[in-house]
Length: 123
Image (tube, rainbow, N blue to C red; front, side, top):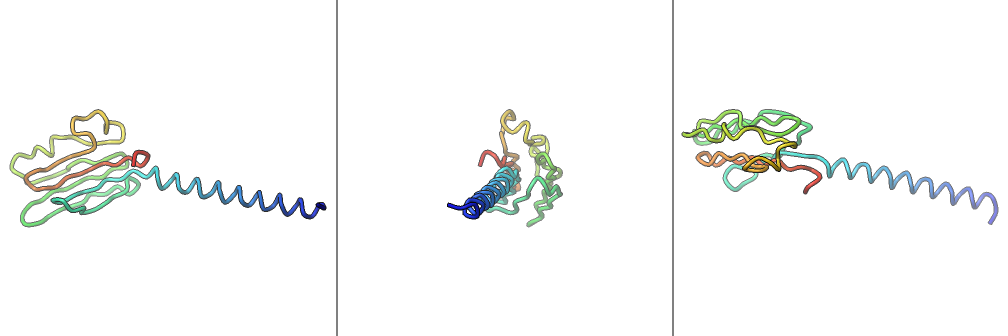
């Protein structure tokens, strides 16, 4: 092996390491992405990344719910259900997901709207 061969091998190893590191970083960012899933009945209505906070309005057949997604979790912001228990379930956050009585869920049973917080590193 001459010097040129060694340089070529070193260059290939360096490029391989850079590609491996880049793909590893990108896959970790995707896997660590936490999100909220809103279900209406048994169907997934919308999936929202916590990196994209917003308010989602669900209005169907006179049943109204408003879900507020923040950078840290979600809360049922408004509802026209009879008992409004869903409004009193509080916010589900990345910090309280394992300690709240309903875990990652907020449920509006009369309107059949369910919110689930999914931590990206626990999928």
